[in-house]
Each structure stands twice: as C-alpha cells, then as structure tokens.
Amino acid sequence: MANFSAVLFDLDGTILDSAPGVFHCFEHTFRMMRTPAPSRESMRPFLGPPLTDTFENHFGWTGEDLDRAVTIYRTEYFATGATTADLYPGVIDVVRAVRAAGIPVGLATSKSASGVAKVLSHFDLEDEFDVLGTASDDETRSAKADVVRYALGLLDEAGADISNVVLIGDRIHDIEGAEAHGLASILVGWGYGTDAERAKANASAATPAALRGLLGV
Image (tube, rainbow, N blue to C red; front, side, top):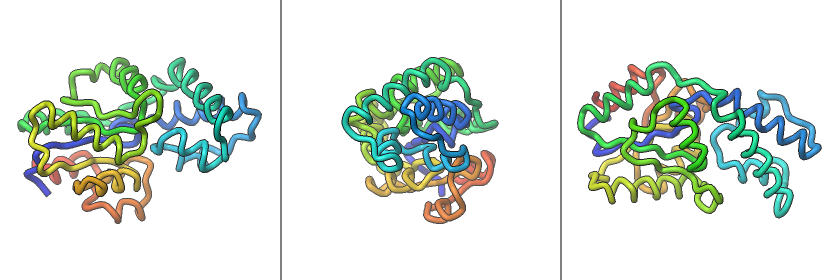
C-alpha cells in the first residue's frame, strides 16, 4: 500500500492516547447524572465513537438528559480531560514524514472542533496538519462518515488530489467511515481496537515504523 494522494488520520487512539482523560470525564458525568459508572474496562468501547452515540446507545439518554450529559462531559473535558493524555511515541513523526514526501495530511476525528483545537494547542501540533476534519461543536456533524466527507471537502478546497486517500484509525467506525467514501483504511495496533476490528481493515500496522512502510514514506 503506497502512492496515496492524501492521508487522513484519526486522533484519539491513533495519534493521542486520550483514554485517561476520557475515562475521567465519563466518570464525572455519571456522578453528576446519578448513574453508576461502569468499570474502565467496560468503558473501552466508548473510546472513539461520537459522544451522543455512546450516551444514547449505552444509557438510553435522549432529549434534555442527553443535552445535560453532553454539557457536563464537555465542561469537564475542557477543564481537565483534554490535556490528561499523551501522544503515542513516533506517530507524529509519521505525520511529518508523509508531509515531507509532499502528501497532504488531514485529521478525520469525531472529536469536536473546539476539543481538537485545545488538544492541538496543548501539544503544539497546530501546524502539523493541512486540514482539520472534526466533528462540529453542535454535534450535527459527528458520525465518522460525515467527518470524513468534511475532511475530503477541505482537502479538495485546498487543491489536494483526493483520488486515492487512505484513512488511518484504530476502531471499526474508522473503517466504516472510510468505506462510505470508497477510501482505503489502515488500523493501528496501539489504539483501542481489537484484532477482530483490525482484520476488517485493508491493512494494519503494529508499530509506527510499520505504518511508514505501508504509506511508503
């Protein structure tokens, strides 16, 4: 797998190990909603999908309850959760190598635009990506397929060739988002996905070095 015209990267579980901060924010939300918190192991499936999907599908929250849960989570996330995270070693080096090879690079993440801005600022990564395909702050754009569509549009507007784009992620919804637009997908082995999820991607990479090989950089 090589000769891609552009590369899209997921953020959480692919570039950023955000699990500690995300778990904390979920636990805080459950306390405020007077709902027993699942174990952190049970919350691993919550890592990656849109926040509203998690609250609706796992807890049945809708309407005012859903709005309140999202507000509680995001308030705590911006206070402490966003920066309670670590960069996966070597992954930003892959991003830089792709751009150095003249290949446009963008994010395609279900994290909100304001959340992404906070994370990129904290880790001094604002200049590492050509476009930022994020979820919208009002959650009207949060599904992975919608985020990927948005990122592709931004790349196209920037003059990038989007004829052969690959999405790098770590979960099944990354694969589904890529497939919705006819993109190839590569799942990384250091994120939150399972072997079964990785088996459904076009390829998988156990290490950043292996990812560089797949990308031809």
